[in-house]
Image (cartoon, rainbow, N blue to C red; front, top):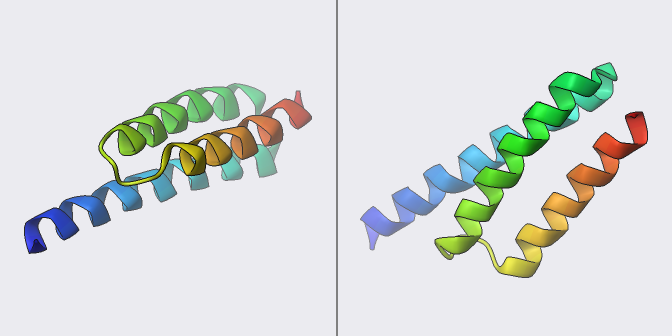
Length: 74
């Protein structure tokens, strides 16, 4: 149980980091950096959802929120 909890915590941390990278790029209004960070974040979030760390709707909501933010700066 501790092993699984540690794995889930690491995955959640990676997702949060990926989201922060996208939000930082959006705040700087750097479209190229935001787009590449978004691609990385989507991949990380989808992997977390496929492993059961996040519910698929939660993952979809996170991705949608980030995509909307990136599209607003374009």
